[in-house]
Image (tube, rainbow, N blue to C red; front, side, top):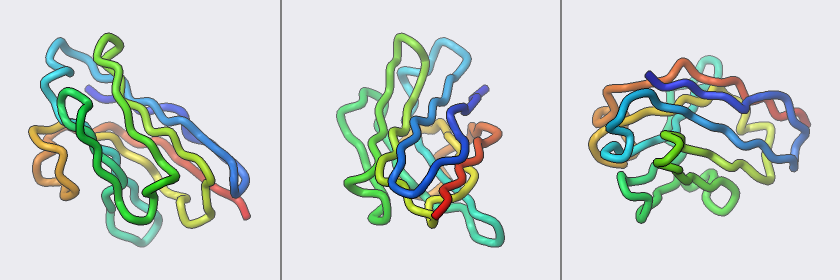
Length: 120
């Protein structure tokens, strides 16, 4: 089970930190990803991290503004979001899977999502 938190309403230029806590004892073996979906749009990749945290990947639209990290002792993956823009407004989902790819296929486990709204 994956549970996201940390979403909310923020002004453009502001920051939010999303968290995703996983249940179970095998968290450290999973690659983790963050995806987002805005109304009337398809779900899109945001960022991913491999099982040991040594490799991270980002969508071009968030590169330099967002940072993904993980704390295996807490079974938690984070998404630090800085310099937020109105176009970042979406429901953000975390996912657990086998490899940190940018498509959703390798991720069988998904959270329920947390809403992020950025006002202009």
